Length: 350
Image: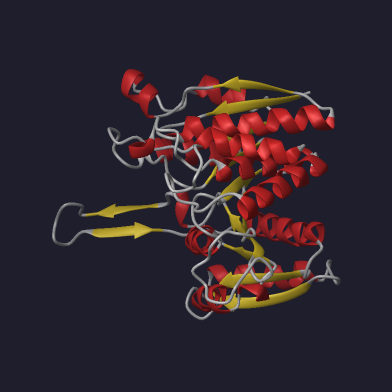
């Protein structure tokens, strides 16, 4: 019996998570395990009603769950940043979810903007450090509001934070058991302090993994090769800011936000899984949003819980639906409604 915290979120988030829960329920029944889902209403509507984003008491409750299943966060009547920082970033930092895991996988039948590339070429993972770097909020202003204003934003990189992120990347590379190559993405020629640390720890830690090939690429080169030769990559590991950027590039080459899922991982604690797209409020309630990203996030959740066969079943069912049924990943153009896509995935599970 697993205990899952469900935060459906804003806009189309609840519709996507509804289909994700449908698939989780079906695969759990098939594989003989159970889960209890407890729903929390954190998001824009609650914030507008109460002024709360994520109460301290709820945060403590969430520490007691096996995993968190999160829908998209973002409300048109709430200033950008309030919900993202108050809910999403706070959960990542407070629960020490120090790895952001982003599979970049092109499924059969899904269109990519890359010429002459197919599913055999686009199948890698980005491991992004998730709790340090420029996102720590370290910095400040001097003479704010004047023509002499100075704004400082510091990138914080600790040995502990770098080492545990890199170790996760090497371990996950072994778990994937594909090309067995980890590529460090950085900028050693300019960010000489931060990435000197990353490079030194990468080299030292790599000695513990003689079966895993090590590679390095500047972030600008990484972006170019992701477009030109994505088949070169197996696992890419990088810092918070660079990871934020290259994972969005990864999303578009795998077919768009409708299929892109991510995990915020604390291997020793509570992890959180989500579709990486926005809440798309203009589509809310119309039953036309693509739920596959949320369903894939549910598959990642299963893998983290150790239900690897169930996770593989979800992935294969999604691949079959993409190959046989969907005309597009775009909302309203799939050829099916949101709930019909969820039903198709359930059908292929069986």
